[in-house]
Every structure is written in structure tokens, then in C-alpha cells.
Length: 412
Ligand SMILES: Cc1cc2nc3c(=O)[nH]c(=O)nc-3n(C[C@H](O)[C@H](O)[C@H](O)COP(=O)(O)OP(=O)(O)OC[C@H]3O[C@@H](n4cnc5c(N)ncnc54)[C@H](O)[C@@H]3O)c2cc1C
Image 1: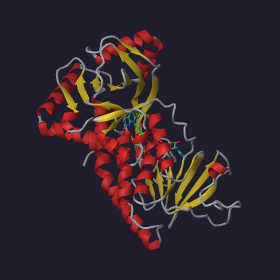
Image 2 (image 1 turned 30 degrees about the vertical axis):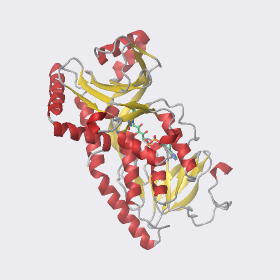
Image 3 (image 1 turned 45 degrees about the vertical axis):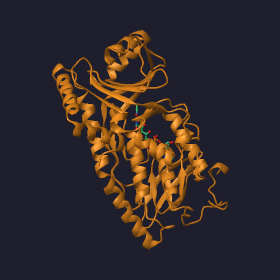
Image 4 (image 1 turned 120 degrees about the horizontal axis):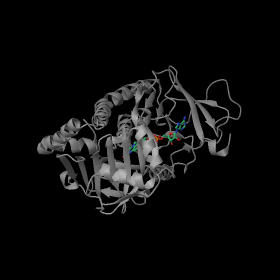
């Protein structure tokens, strides 16, 4: 056991492992200090509930991850309130989103005037967000053990047993009244609950930075470009690009070299950008839809990517995870460490949490899945129907407003 893996309270954990599993000195353990786990810990702390957080990585290990993420205005408000936003150096605002079918009639343009806010959202790198979350956890004095993987989680009648493996070493057990799983897409899935369900998309995302001749600050694009959607997110003077294509197409594009790859991107993006060029080598990210086998039971609660992994077409994965985390904190029973009576309160609160998240999670997962499938049908009839659908939404103010509210604040 290293000092870095020593829990607050000095004598804990004991040098020799006792027969009984020692309890954690906090009413809740959070597995994963990624952006969603961090938001959950901060939101619980804001309600006076202390969480003990564990993460397998180094605090700054996420920093090199330059995957761009679009944060909705709703997410920005939450991050500001929880003290994360102040640690983000320069989030790039999105003031307008143009959604269109390449080469067909029909498009929608959402602007911040539609929402009555200074921006619709912001673009940040995953690594910057993860680091800002680490700083906010530190500033809020939330106990966190880095380099401590949780190897397994098993619910018993009155508690949950976690097996910790600090620094990749031998595991030891601790008990907690409740465990929040925020350990991402490849997480441990929490013991004997039904395993995750889902399927791989026959698609990958090509992710990288792209420059172009004609760039308008603040303007984001979602182009339905035949074989899959293309998102261009505005940064300072360039775009972060998430381009969805079939794996074989991606392979061919990457083998064709930078110039051919740039011409292919120009064709997918359509007119209006001028010559485009890749500023960073595109990274290939496989895509899958996954859902946890449980929403939340009496003591183990998956949130964020541990609960659902979405197709990135609508940029909703983290935004949905933030709403999970805020919903959990809002549902938490407000007393100290749960006694057995309070344990009943906890079970009721977690059931209420699961029920309160059903619609937003269900609709967001289903909508992104449908959009992902519909936008990857590559034929002229499908393209015409998509264009018609966009035009119809644009002509119906109530539908348009509903679509925007759902994108920014979630489904209800
Ligand atoms: C190409 C692409 C583009 C995307 N764009 C957007 C976007 O524009 N907007 C958006 O909202 N979302 C987007 N997403 C989704 C977003 O990245 C995820 O939803 C988000 O990162 C999930 O955060 P998380 O904290 O749940 O999981 P993660 O970010 O995966 O964090 C999990 C944490 O748990 C830790 N961990 C894992 N296992 C263990 C263990 N056993 N013990 C201890 N710690 C553990 C890890 O070290 C990590 O720190 C995109 C995804 C992709 C692939």
C-alpha cells in the first residue's frame, strides 16, 4: 500500500486485513473520477454528502486525450455551479448549429437567439475537461485515491464489498453502504447484475482537427454525408472533426494519405468551406451502443458511460451523464451515514433516481441510435427523405423548439 492509496483517517485501511471487511469512512464510494464521476462527487458534496472516489489512473493521465466534446448550455450551467468551469482554460462557444443533408434541400439552423442564451454550448477537449474536474475535486477537498483500480463490486444484504487494487497490486476489500459506478464504457459492470447489452455499430469515428479556407467562429455543422454523419465543431480558427464512416472506408481513407483524405472530407462537408486540410492525424475510434444490465438497485448505481454508451452523432454522451450525476445527487436522502432505517431511505431514493432517469435515458439512447442508423443509409431516396424531414422540423416551430430544448437540457 502506498501513501497515495491511504484513505483519510490515518489508521485506515488497517495494516493487517481483519476477518471482517472494514467499512469505508464515507456513505458512498464512487468508482471512476472521469468527468461524470467527478460531477457526481461534486454534486453530492454540494448537498453535504461525502463520497470517497477511486480511479485507476494518474490524476493528469487524461490530459493527452484531445477528443473534442460539445457541452450543452445546460451542462455548462452545472459545471459552473460545481466549480469545474473555472478550471477550463478556453472553452470555445457554439453560437449556431447548422444541420443539413449534403447536396439536398432541407436544413435546420439553431442559434443562441432561439434559446435566449449567450451560447448553445461549448467545445472542450476531453483531456482539459478531465483535468478541470480533478482540480475541482481537489478544491472541494473530496477524498480521492488515484492509481487505485476497483477490481470488483458485490452487493450483500446491507452493504457493497469493493475489492481495491492500489497501484495494480494485491486486492483488499472494503465495505460501503452504496457504490456509484462511473467507470466508463469498459468498467467493471458491478458483480452479478445482468451483463451489459448492446451491439457494435459497423462504423468508426475519424477524429481530428481540420483547417479550412472559410471559417466562421462559433458556427458548428452536422452534415449527413451519405455513409455517415460528419460533425464540425468550431475551435479558435479551426474545426474539431468527428466523421463517421464504415470501417473499410476509414481504412481506405487513412491509407490514401493526407491529401486524398482532405479531398474526401471536402466532398463530405459539401460547399461553403473552401479547401480543407487535416491539422492532426485523424484517430480512429470504434463505436458501440451499450446499456448496463441494471439502472440502479438498492446499493449499486451505474451512471454516465457505465450506464449507457451512445453513438456520438448528437454529442450527447457526457451531457446525459451529467444529468445522471445531478439526478443522483438530487435524489440522495439527506442524513449522515445510513443506519438500517436510513438504508431503507437510500433504497427508496435510488429507486426514485432510476425512475426519474428512465425517460431522459431511454429517449436519448433511442434517438441517437435511430439518427445513427437513418443517417448511414447511403442512397438518394434516403437522402431526400432526410432532407424532407429536416425541412418539416424547421417549418414546425413547436417541434423545432422541442428538439432544441431536448438537445440542450435533455428529454423529459
Ligand atoms: C468520438 C466521440 C465523440 C464524443 N463527443 C461527445 C460530445 O460532443 N458531447 C458529449 O456529451 N459526449 C461526447 N462523447 C461521449 C463522452 O466522451 C462520454 O460520454 C464521457 O466521456 C463519459 O464520461 P464518464 O466519466 O462516464 O466515463 P470516462 O470518461 O470513460 O471515465 C471513466 C473513469 O473511470 C476510471 N476507471 C475505469 N475503470 C476503473 C476501475 N475499474 N477502477 C477505478 N477507476 C476506473 C477511468 O480511469 C476514467 O477516469 C463522445 C464520445 C466519442 C467516442
